[in-house]
Every structure is written in structure tokens, then in C-alpha cells.
Image (cartoon, rainbow over all chains, first blue to last red; front, side, top):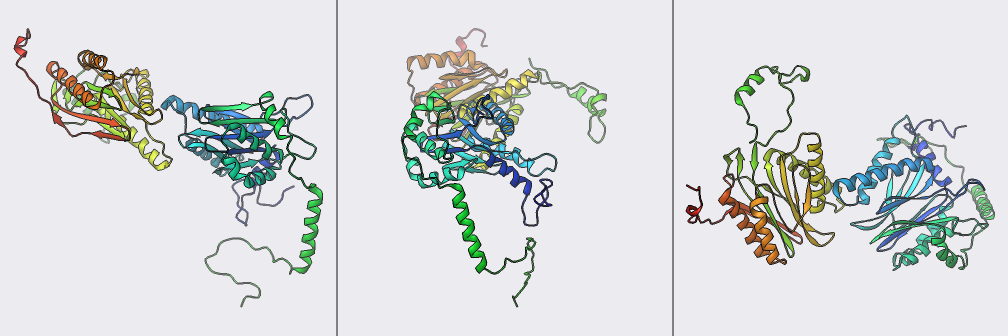
Length: 288
Length: 255
């Protein structure tokens, strides 16, 4: 039932200094379909894989406009994301009302971080089960910000979250210089689609039904491109050869075998110790 | 005429207040009163935009009714290197606003994200605050002129604001009495020379104050100027302008 006895509520530390409920919330993000984001000197773009819960249902929306100058892509619990979106939209609207100018992304994310942090320290309730990639444009230029259920947020050059998103991160790391130097929105979105393509399984391929793209930048209000609007770019990208996807199962098997072999040559692992910082050095075992 | 503070009834009321200074709201001798007029107040302020900046002008009197209670009080506030504010009306209400602006400036500084007041955002925020207060039937008794350089648009910004929350932008602004005396003069100046330079704007602003001084007993010839150009805002030290009264005798009713 439980992985261990330290995960009953979010306020209890494990002896290893971990908060398991928060880590489980971070796992919820990985259950959601992938979102990738990146930026160049003038624009930021996000692309997401949409899922369809059944043949008779429409695709789950993944990208949401917050204000003219920013929007988010979500992975995890959609219902939680809607609460967060509502909060973000209200904040942006209030800021515009008071100051007649858009809210800077740093301030927006700061207030969201404060709101989310509370859920990681209260025993009633739970952390939000959703990760966000926020893009926006303000007085500091384009932004891409990753926000976790742990209430951490990171300013990124390129990032991906959600299922199989490691493949997209590999692409984003490899092509960092290339997409940062892109001069047009189209080139930036092409890179987003290529990165997103790497998160798909072998039996899937990019299609306008499956993919949502959103862009924001200088003199370019946040806009989601769905369906026909991304069709042309997708048709270009899918003509390119796919990154070699190793069959997942065999790779895992090889790694497992390697580990097994190595393990036989190693001394047995040490007993687990309680990870609590002590002010006196404790010596155990063979240490004199 | 504004409601005057009645010292005798105030003393009588104070006697009924408990010694610890707390007033019981349900047994208060007098009901809570909203502002019904200013106490110490400043008169008209002037704003003139020129080709690549703006100039604000105000005299330095703090009046208590018709009494010149304070002769030298600053009515121009430098908010940052792009933004200045000129006040007229109740000085205490201005100090309340000044504190809020200062607190927000400190929060902006602490955020360390390069985001701070701009003339447009200050003008907008003041409009909200004043309109909100008047909607509670407890107005802040001020008119403002907000000026500065808007970095977003790379243009000078000049706006006016009344105590009811009516706000507007214009190449020349005056508050209070200045709307009748100074504004027609400024309109004429700008019409003759739409692309004013800094020097002409300064002379026009000072002359607008002079016109007011001739006709308004609450004003004085001690004044301050604030000049904002790109990346530079200066509130200048107090000076005095010259006046000539020799034509006054020609005015009917002067003596």
C-alpha cells in the first residue's frame, strides 16, 4: 500500500531528508503528456502532445493563454492546472487594471510560487499535481519558466516536462545554440516540433490533431496554434528522418544485465543509515 | 469654503475619550466623519511637455484656508529617474500617497528585476486609488500632475488627475485654479509652437505660475521646477520669480 511509513502527509520528513508526498506530486507531472518549450532572442514557444481520453471525446487542452503577454503549457492534473490558470489570469488582470501595463513574468511566477509553497507545508490538503511551462514576454525580453509541484520555479533556455520528456531534453541540450540563434518564429517552432517528436513512441507520429503550439514574443501576443495552423510546419518536420529510438525494453535489459554483473564483483552495500546531520563525527565499521 | 476645524468642540469631544486613548465605536460621542475638505493644502501646479521631456512647476505654499501656514514645502516628488509627481490639494493626503509610492519603490528595488514605476503606471495607479477613495465617499483631496519619460514608448509622458479619479494626458496640464488662469495661456503657447524646447517650456511654466500669483492669494512667487528628460529627472531647488505690479492700479477694484 505505502512505499514507506514517512509519506502519510506532506509535513513529515523521511529520515533521508525527503518529503515523499511532494515527490509523488512530482511523479504526477510525469504521467501527463509531454510539453516542450524554448526561446530565442525575441520569442518563446511551447509545443505539447494532446491526449484523447476516448474515441468519442475531444483532445485534452494542454496550452492556455494567461494574458496577452504570457501563457502556460501543462502536464499533470488538468483540474489542478485550471485552478492555477485562474489564479494567474486574475493576477495579470489586476496588475493591468492597477498599472495599465502587463505584469512582469518574474512577479507573476513569484506570487504563484508563494501560493504553491503553502501546499507543501500544510498537513491538510496536498501539493498541486501539475507542472507548468510558462512562456511570456516582458521588459526583460522573452521568458521560459518551469514550475514544479514542489513550488520551485526555474528560468530556462529550453525545457520539457511530462511523459518521455527526457528525449526532448536531450534534443534541447544538443541543439541549444541552434534554436537560440533562430531568427524567425517558424524556425523556433520547427525546433519545438522536432523536440516534441522525440517524446513520441515508435507507433506515433506528429499530426495537427495531436500537437498544440503556442508562441509569444516581441510585438507578438500569446497565441495558440492548433489544427490547420500548425499543419504546414508539422508536414515539413515529419519528412525529416526520426531520431533513432532504441527499443525501450532491450535497452533496459542490457542495463540490468550490466548491473547484475557488476554487483557480483562489488562488496555488499552498506546498511542504511539515518541521514541526520550531527555535530559530532560518528565513525563506524573499519574506521579506527 | 472648506469646513473649519472647531477647536472648542474638539476639546469637549476629547474629554469624553477614555484615558487609554481607545475610542469605543458604538459609544462614540461623534460619528466617524469622512473628509469634507482639505486642511493644509497646496494650490495649482503646472505641467508642460516639450520635445524630449516634461517640466512640472509648483509654488511652495502650504495654505490653511487663506492663511499662508507654511511658506516653503515641497510639492514636487521625484519617484525615480523617469517619473515625477506634482500635487495640489490636501498635503496630508499627498503624504499618505507619497508613503505608498515609497513602499512600492522599495519592494521594486528588493525584487531586483528592473521593474519600477513609470509615469504611465503611476498615473494609472493614482487614478485607481483616488477613484476608489471617492467611491467610498471619502475622497483623497488632491489633484495631481504626473510626468516623466516613458521608456517603453521612448516618449515624454504628461498626465493630469482630479480627486474624483478623472485622468487624462495632454501636452500641457494645470490643476485647480490653474485650469482657468494658466491652461489658456499654455494652450496658446503650445498652439504657437507645437515642438517646444526645454527652455521655452520652462519659461512658459514659470510664467503660468506668475499669472496665477497675480490673481491667487494662496500662491507665492517661491517655486520649484522638476525637469525630466530621457534617463534623468531633476527636482530643482526653490527659487523666486520676478513680478511687476505697476499695472495693477489699472485693474478695477484693485485698491
